[in-house]
Image (cartoon, rainbow, N blue to C red):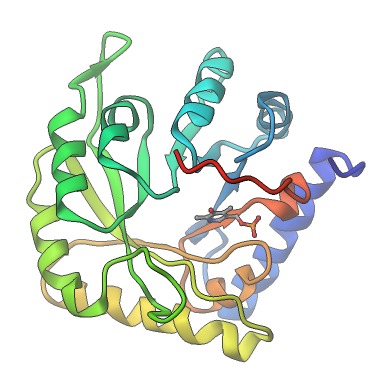
Length: 242
Ligand SMILES: *Cc1c(COP(=O)(O)O)cnc(C)c1O
C-alpha cells in the first residue's frame, strides 16, 4: 500500500482526468472514473468510497462478491463493474451481483448473463445488466476480445437480448510508450463505436484507459477510465483465473 492517503491519490487521478478532458475540449462529466480494486482489501475500497468514489471494478468473481458483501451498508451504494474475463460457470453470480460487465466477447456468455439476470434484488426491481463488448484491438498481443471482423454481428445479437443493455466497447491495448502511440488503439476503438452507432445501435460508452494511458484514452473519447495502480498502489503478482 502506498503511504499517500486515499484522498490524495484520488485527487491526483481526478486532476489527470480533468487536464485531459480540458485538453480534449470535453465536458468534465463525460468521463467516469472506475476504481479497479482487484487484489486490494475491502478496507481499501471502503476508504476510497468514503472519499466519494462510487464505481469499483473487480476482475475475480469470488473476490469481488466478498467486497460487494463487505460494503453492502455503504451509502450511497457503490456501483460494481465486473471487468475480468468471464467463464460460463461464473455468469450466474456475476449477473446477480454486479451492475456492469465490461469484457463480454462471446454471444454464449451474453446469453447466459441475460437469462440469469434476476428481475429483483433485495426486493427491488433490478435494471438490465449494463454490458460492453471487449474488442481485440491489438490482435497479436491478446487472446481475449472479439475480432473486429466479428464485432457487428456480435453487437447486434447482444443488443437484442432482453435483460442486457449493450452500452459500448472496451479494450486493453498492448502497452506502448508515449501519447502518440498510445492514442492509436483508442482512436480505433472510437471509430468502431462510431461505426456501430451509424448502423443504428444506441451506444454511449468507451471503456478504455488505465493508470499508464488514461490521458491518451480521454483524448480519444473514453467515457469510463479503469484505474487501479494509480489509486491503490502496485499490485502483488497474482495467478488466479476465476
Ligand atoms: C487491472 C486492470 C485495470 C487497471 O490497471 P492499472 O494499470 O492498475 O490502472 C484496468 N482494466 C482491467 C481490465 C484490468 O484488469
